[in-house]
Length: 430
Image (cartoon, rainbow, N blue to C red; front, side, top):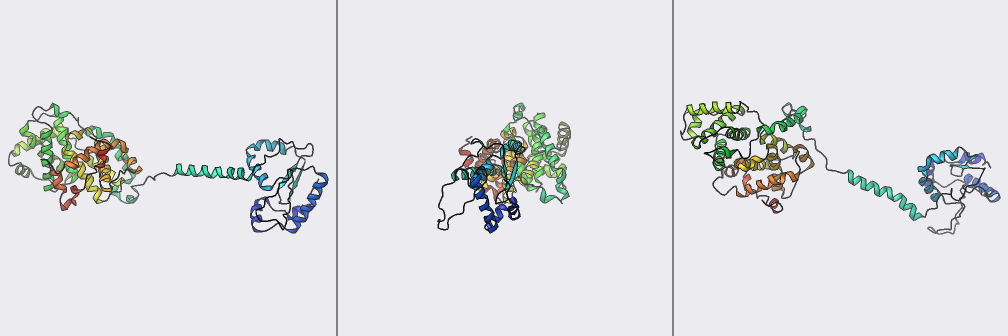
């Protein structure tokens, strides 16, 4: 059977079918053509795949469900069945090659009819209830929601974008620079047990020396880089050279002199160092110790200290001045403590930033950006961080209070008066 060409002239293109169905009803010509199709179907009755669009009674209420014809399936169900069978496209292509006649239904869709043999009940699309159809269409939405939840993650910030036009920030190779620092930082570390090789001095004497030098450093108004390099020079020298007790203060003064020559523009003169030592040493003593120290260290002053890493990690944390001062306060407390030598400089810096954030915000905070740039997870920092909190609690008591007094001033915004992050000690007792 061939359908009249009048249908083709009034048919709707499949691509605009949904749009036209939403904007207007099927025209009178289509209804007339539909009546012709239905009459032919009643006579011949051999095309079960052709849709019989039955007109709704005018008296039928909105929402009333009518019994579907078992031969002529509703459009929505047949469309759902077609969607479900799209995965078998290869089988359908094979079947289409053997089809005889192709017709258009009243909606302009092609209906392929096989004249040779009727379709068996096994080939019929499975009738699906509206509930099953809704569930089938609902599953992709649910899957999409789950996938979107998995995709949404904390963004990794580009901390160097704001310095793209600043030549001093060396944005082009800053990552390579810090990768090099990490590679060589182990060479700047000392053994955490080196004091056992010193017969006349111990870790308590070292703590007294550094606590005093921190105050001297502040009085001379030197750079922060100078302080960290000075402590590093002292530890590296004491690890390799045996020193008697009466020469320990001289070692500290000479270490400060060398650090100033490396970092500062204006360097304290030797006479000033002799005065602050209450003239315990002569100029000759200072120069001889300076020669011994630089030879023992093989003139290696270019080492990555905690200061180098701390500046980078504070930038990753987008720290303000308050957070920056607190992080430096915590790191300087660690400089005095001999037991903190077991941690590399990068970990001390990362733990200081983490502890400072916990102190300021009163909650554990470690962003993905901080973890990326520090290469330390929150769990890796907990041991070092809890020790810092303990030092913070004891900073104002005892004999060694140089760091606390330094940061308990207007110059450093009274940073040492912050309440320690004691909640870090609850789950991680020392």
